[in-house]
Image (cartoon, rainbow, N blue to C red; front, top):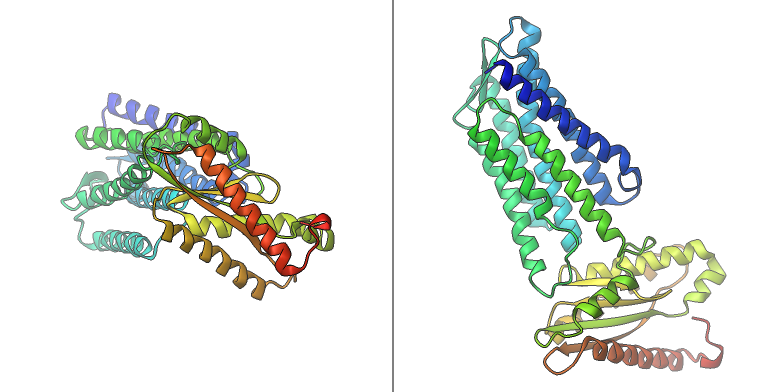
Length: 385
């Protein structure tokens, strides 16, 4: 498996993979070291890739050489290649699921855990019965069950593509995080490595793919509110311009305005106010994902846009938000309570525009706010919200 040309190609590919991963790691510290879960996922993938590239070169360097050290390097390098692909594939799918759907469903958790546990058990079995790979005379060779790991990787990739297509070609809302920026380089690297025995390209191509992920995330962050993680008003303006001439399709929307938000800031401090805004944003995301997005429209106002024409579904989302508020208020030890005035509307682009929808939900919210004032006996001329 050696040969000077082959080894040179391996070293160059792995060094490039390490350099790309290192540049992404040190050049995006804000993303990777923050509290954002997506940043942590990308960090795990980068570290795993750097180790994979380094161990890959070491394994090729020691391949066929005599001695126990060479055997350990070759065997552990091969073992890490399979384990690292499992880690990256699983973390990638979790990242896509949480980014688009807001969470990882129980079914997906079972699937990911089942695949990874099975694959790891097969690697343990491989120690005694080398069916995945073997190291003879300190030289690595593939076994007949090698394809299992390729299939698992392809399942993770296919799952993420299906989810992306389902969302991307719906209302057109989710468009910044392009799954193909990751999938394309990974598929290319896998095909090259499978078709060219002795040439290692998967890990370096994964490094390029992760760079694509980071670019996509950074591009999307321009449209994100840093406090709540929801989309910002700039994104709403982007939607308005894109849908300005649309004459087919449908959308639904809600406008939410927190009740007596100023009292939270006055009585409990601005940190509590920031916390309350983040809680409200997260509750809204849980209620509408994966069919909708949350936009922080103004200080304590949020707009929720949903890719649906089902009015009953919209009302269910509203009830879910109200139920979550009640649950928070019951458990909240900080004593402040959350509530909001909510207005909603439905839009058919054949007869109305998105501006018509925004005007409607603004009026509906205003009416709901007025009802709240009357119910609580608050003088609207002296309201503190």
